Length: 103
Image (cartoon, rainbow, N blue to C red; front, side):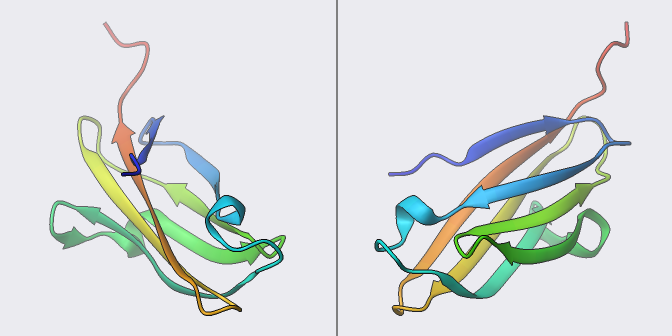
């Protein structure tokens, strides 16, 4: 079983996220399609507010900007891709929004 990666960010931050699929695809395979790149607050789709410009980079990575969020909340990002070989792979991220440096 794969454990989702965790990222902690502050609400104001806008970060460039790279999700690598090379170790999940057959050798020499490349991503031909991002079938899903969505962000959820529980069951609510908040993709439009938190994810922008998801693209394939270097043939085996998905990159996107992650922005916003509410301090104290945890969000779940799901990225699904399809390889040229027909493989379908999914990665999940847990995004924790936390203010730092406040007493």
